[in-house]
Image (cartoon, rainbow, N blue to C red; front, side, top):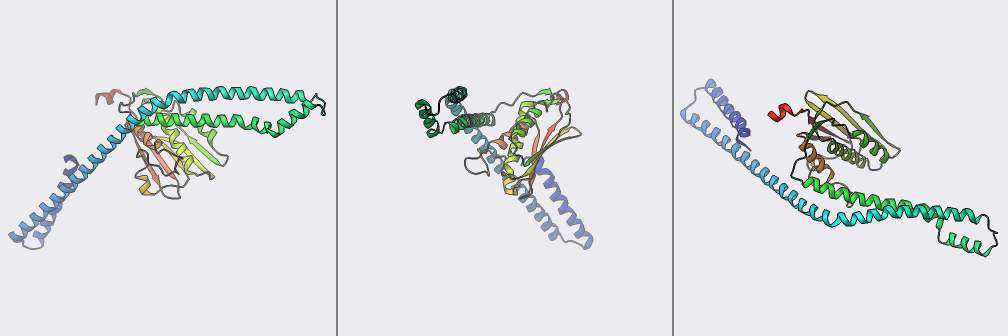
Amino acid sequence: MPLRRQLPVVVAMLLLSLSAYGIAVMAQPITPFKTALLVLVAAVVVWLVSVWSQRWSDQKQIADIQKEQQLATLGDAAAGVGHEINTPLTYVSSNLSGLADDIEAYNAFIEVLDSASDHLEIRNPFYQKALMAYQSLAIADTCDAAPARVNDCLQGIHHIERVINDMQALSRSTPVELQLSDVNANISAVIDIVRTRLPDDVQLDVELIQPPQMLCHPPRFAQVVMNMLINGLHALSDKPGRLSLRQYQTADIFYTEIADDGCGMSSDVQARIFEPFFTTRAEGKGAGIGLALCYKLIEEHQGSITVDSRPGEGARFTLALPVRNGDKDNAD
């Protein structure tokens, strides 16, 4: 712990010792031996506080160094993975998009053949052969399912791309460049996207305000809000529930609250949710990157994220951004 943080504790302990000494003197005469003993006890207390403070500081420094090493390793891995995977992913994504168009063309052709077959005599050998093939190959089901399967593949590829991009963003050491703008510039698009993912039994309540012009990065802030809302949706565990997005401002702090009435979390989980790769979801359901990235992006805005939750009572995340215009802040 830095000296400026230790000093108040040490001073408090000295004042406490002096107060005890004063009370003892007022109560009854105190011998030199007792005076020396009291001073010794005070010195021991101060020494113990100092030792504890130094140990806490050392542990925090070790944890910070380990986190930096993890992020550095993550950055190397993300760079290598991104280089090796992004190119073939682009090929696969492009070919799947083309395949979706091909399937649409095949479906249109099959519809034409189906319509033309209505003009054939039912006893016609060609009609009978085509009908048997149509039924045995389940062409109707294939035509219905093929576009959805291709779309699932494309969604999976896009998810892989997002994970790689998030890993690279999480490990990036260069801070993002903030500009004076409307922090809510991209929030409407986020809300529209989230609404398309909501089941019929999940309600999203939105209460936005017009934010002041402030130093920010609107796309990154929108990414944070998106991750938080999707995280809240996952917390509902496919059950009926409610999500809320609310904003307000107090003095020079702009607040955004994202809340859900899902499963909630324990204090132990809350202490770790912003750690990279920590997740409470089932294996294969989450990479544990989203909330860690949110924390980093809000830190880049010199803001903070807090969470209030209890098991079975949902969770509320509060994003606090300082309203800075760049003039006075840059001078500071």
